[in-house]
Length: 391
Image 1 (cartoon, one colour):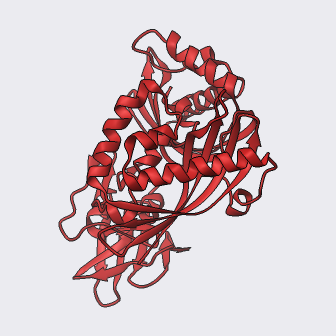
Image 2 (spheres, rainbow, N blue to C red):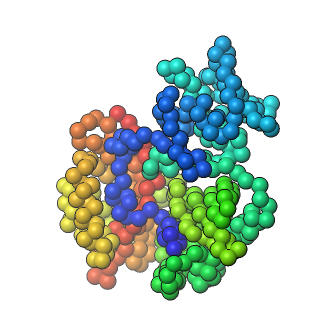
Image 3 (cartoon, one colour):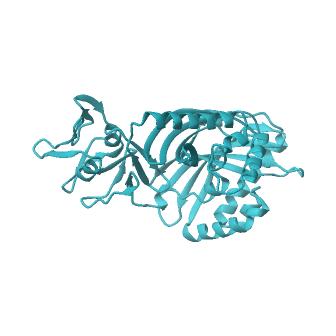
C-alpha cells in the first residue's frame, strides 16, 4: 500500500511543511547493514553532492585493512580480492589497478582524511542510499545467493506487472498482510480508476539477504498515460522482503527519493485554457502564498482540497510549523502547462527567505489544481522540483 500511495508523488502536506536547507542543519548519519557507524575522528559532511567521511572507520567496517602513506597522502584499503587506493586532492582512484574518476576528491581537514562514501561502498560491492530528508546514508553489502536472488527478482517484477495491469488483488497477494486486505485492495482499485500510469523498473539491486529477510533497492520511473494528472517521476525505493513458509513476500516499499521528470522549459509552455479559468487559478495561487506569509491557517486550508477528514491534523501540523519557522515566500512566476475542464497543473517558481537572516532559497514546484462543482479552483496536490540556496 505504501508503494501504491508513493506513486502519487509528494503530498500537499509534505510540501507545505517542507523546510529549506538553510533552516534545518541535521548531522549526517551512516548505517552499515543495520548498524550505525560512530565517527570519532571527525563528522561526515556534504560537499558537491557527495558525502565525505573519515576513511579509517569506513574501511574497517567494510572489511578492509587500512594502509596510510602520510608522505604521499594516499590511503589504501585491501582485502583478499580487493585493493582500493585514493589520494588527497586527486579525483582519480584505483580499484584493483583500474583507474576510476571521483565526483569529489578526498580531503584532509584538521588531521583527518575524508573520502567519498558512495565510491568506497560501491567499490566493495555494496550500495549507498542517501536520504536527503533525514540526512542519512544506508550502506548494504551485496550477497551471492543465486536461488534467492532469482526468486526476489521475479517477485519485484511480478509486483510491477500487477501494478501496470491494474490487478490490485494480484499485487496484494504478494504483500505480507497482518489483517484483512479488502480495504487496501479497494483503495488501489479507486486509484486505478482515477490515474493511468505506467511504471518501469530502471534498475534493481539486491543489497542484502540475511536469513529470511532481504533488502532491495529499485529505481523506478512512473509515466502518465491518461486519467487525472500526476507528473512523470523517477522514484528510488528501499524494499523490505521477508520469507514466509518458504515464499518471498513484500513487507514494505519505502520511497527514499523522488524526482519530478518535468523540465523548466516544459513547465513554462503554456496550455490553452479559458481566460476566466486562468485568472481564477492565478488568484487562488496568490491567495495561497499570501496565507502562508500571514501564517493564516484557515486561509491556507481554504485554498486547498485536502479534505475535511484531514483538517484537524493539518491545522495541528501547520500550527507547529509556523511556530518553528519564520519564512517569507515570494511568488516569482507561474504558468498553467496542463489543463482539462476540472483540473490544471501549474509550474511555479518562488523564493523563500528566512525572516531573521539574509539567506534565501529559490524553488520550483508543480501545483495541481482541481475545480469544484461551484467553479472554485483550489490546490489539490503539489510536487517539489528543485531548489537553490543563496545569500
